[in-house]
Image 1 (cartoon, rainbow, N blue to C red):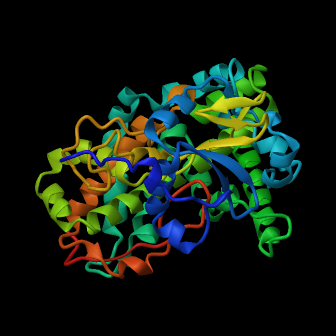
Image 2: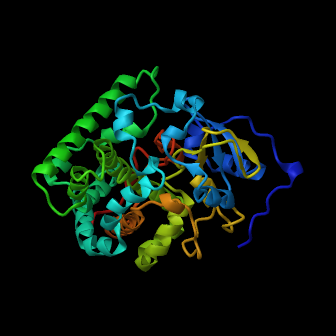
Image 3: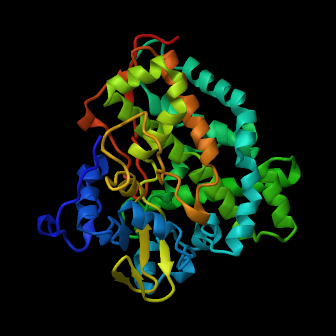
Length: 420
């Protein structure tokens, strides 16, 4: 394999300013645009469908540096009025009550809050729970039709991560059964004038009411699970009521929807590379390394959430005003030919593979070990128990989610010969 050479300055094309990150072709395959942006420079002004403008970091070295740059803070209070006018989509009082979780905190507050959750997601605990996770995956496959077609989102990927999460955080069955996956769409921006705004606000209020029920239940029926420990921390004054609700919000939404999406992107990548799919089915011992490559090749965490400078600052040669939002493209970084030879090739033997699918620095995903285990179990189970697993629609007919920061398929129609 050879490393792709970057174009010379004379070869670089002029990109629009700002670069629009929107539309079905972009959501279906953002990588050609990311390639053009990397070649033109590491930082670009971009425009999102909501009208938000931001600065996007695209190259691997620049992304790695930005993720570890302590000048860039995550707290929304650092955003300027231009950002706030468009980006504070979630209305009050929900914004103040649900948006003060780990992703929007800076040290030292972030450090203390993160310490409350990390024990639940250690590799050792994940390994102890692996037999239970396998049981959950097998139950879902048992419920699939005996032969295709089937939708692997509604039949598997939409449920497996949430059932695993419920086990890990101590969400009782009666509450888990009440969770409406539609609530997860509250992280998809719906502006104040959007026709879908009333439905968005209804989802938000429904989820907030559900979180209140979770807190009440755990206060009345305490155990040694993560949710109970967070409620105890609130009652001891270690968390504010808003921080408690926000952390539960983050667990319920960010703790499972990205894994659902990652299962779909991984399967689609394998369907597009049938030789690699066949090899993985025949050699399941390749799964740990294959999962790393599938995470790099098409990550469900496409873009990070906002970061802000507290003063006008230089970002890899670009002057960024204080309070403007800075976003890192993890997908663009993971396809950078300067770091990954033949980056568009799905190479299950790729090593080393220092991808940024889970971020980097103090905001590195605390659930990374759990997500890796879920992906290995999900892919291993589906490939082993559904011989002949294949995509049942054309590539161009895959319906991609419109989420601004993430990648995944709404539905994944598949065929298979039989269910083992």
